[in-house]
Image (tube, rainbow, N blue to C red; front, side):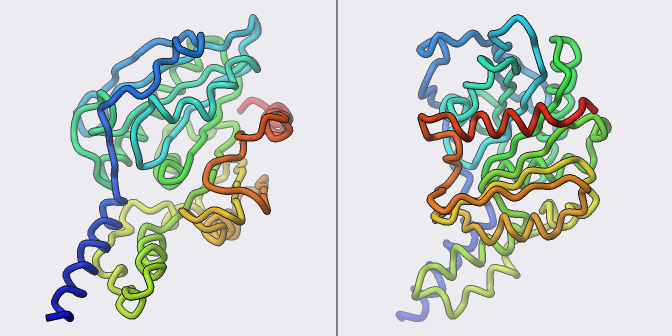
Length: 280
């Protein structure tokens, strides 16, 4: 009887990983106006059909240096995630963030294939916004799950040669490996954790195509990241064939917290990197 229960809970854990533990919410947690931020709500179609919702924050400076498009992680929606990058508008950059299917006000249902198609549509929308709203640099910023999603889609993006920088922040390149890691971290599931390789698909994993990326890439890892351990980011860095690539390692770093400090050191470091790169 105990064996049956063990197998049941193992399946639950692995299926959850197969779905990337998508945790969409339709709740609006924060309104940008609370922080005196100007924004526009946009709707655009996914390549799969459903309408997606995005927020566009115009640069709050006279000079517009470019646009940063955010691909957020697996929980909640843009009404929480925009906060981590909203500061860029005061530095001359537009910010465009959007929700995958089933997140926020976006229609549809989140799946690996669906998020890949959402990403393609969002890249096109973000690029067009950058072209029409005065920007020069075009930065693709992926956080956690969003890092895998945008890296996979970037390879098939028709304007990939126009991307100034791809950021892989606290992310992974294989759904199978992150599923294996999550299940193996539970001590009583460790003996059967290899089942993750059979129940989780890597069809839309960035690991399959990441060696084709030629865009400059910044990989960010935190040694204390308990959600996506630093080894996953280091694997991405090794897989990359880009001529320009950087690996930023933070001994005290946790999950997606590079810009959490109030001293602004990492903000300046990031801006210096972006501004050192030529517009593509």
